[in-house]
Length: 122
Image (cartoon, rainbow, N blue to C red; front, top):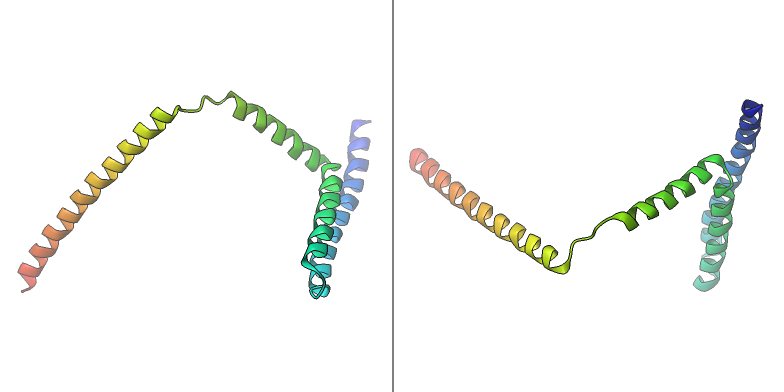
C-alpha cells in the first residue's frame, strides 16, 4: 500500500514541480515584458510569485525533505560552541604572523634563486 501512495505522490509531485517551473518562468517573462512598469510593482509581483512557488515546492516530497534538513541544520548550529572574541583574535593574529613569515621566506628564496640564475645566465 505504501508503494501505491508513493507512486501517486510522485505523479502529483511532477505536476507540482511543473507548476513551480511555470511560476518562475512567468516571473521571468513577465518581468521582461513589463520592464516599463514601476520597479516597485514588478518586485512585489516577483515576491508573490516566489512565495507561491516556494509554497508549492514545499508540498512535494523533496520540498518536505529540504525543509526537514533545514530544521535539522538549524538545530545543529545551536549546538556549536563558538569561539570567544579573545580566541578569535589570537587565532587571527597567529595566522597573520605565519603568512608574513612564510611570505618573507618565499620572497627571500625567490630573490636568491633569481640572483643565482641571473649570475649563471649572465
